[in-house]
Picture 1 (cartoon, rainbow, N blue to C red):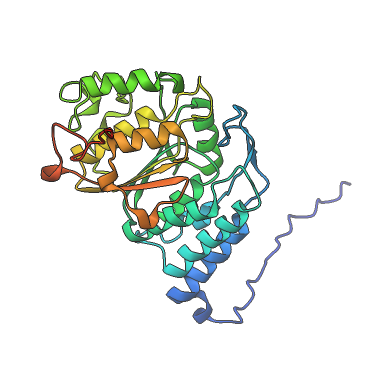
Picture 2: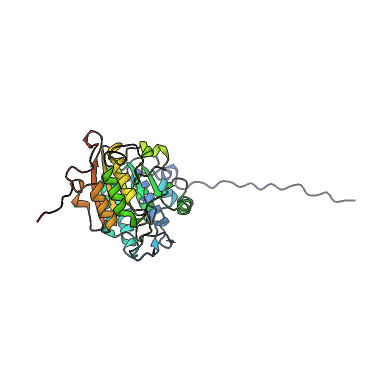
Length: 320
């Protein structure tokens, strides 16, 4: 006779009692941001090195230390609004200290100068030319605003989107310029300043050689509050250089903006300093937040913008 098979056994798990009660499930606003701050520090990685780092004039691009802000910290408080001051300060302090250990990262004084502008303007519309080590920092400091990145390397754009999640808004740009062409490009822009290269126009339809015309159409309609020019590469004669980025930033600020903070990094180099003086103008420069390697300009648009000249007081040659 066959033995009857035992029936299935049922395992019943009794939920454990909650020792702490419902009170511990809720957090005060202050405790919430403490958790956010801890998440930031716990998610920062200082070991990731990217080959598309900012480079010196030797023509070779050294690696840069890259900060990675975890998804929890980047999306914390998604309801909007600027970061609390203590969280903002902690991010800047940590980034500046970590960058000091890498000669290829942005200098601490430049990080702090840019952060001071974002502290005043955020949450805002922030446009950044160039992806790099500080990309997660700028995005985090502009919490609650819109931050858009532009880069000349489509593969690096895809890499950064994968590394920082779908919330990173970045687009690749095709530049048709080279550093060696600076004199010719400036001469052409000056010759057509009241035509193709005028200071107020829709860049989407521009025929100026310095105009960036291949961005998503909607970006040309945005009134940018802050524009940071930290790309494309400009350390070699064959590099794209930042002539087009600076010119396009100047036109965007005058065409759509009311008051735009434009920051130009690597300002000590010829292309950056010459183009900033040509299109952003010394009369608009803010000395208090400028450094030897960072030029800060406040450009006014709308009715305050001239439609014929970029600068009201063009540089003149000294006479003997």
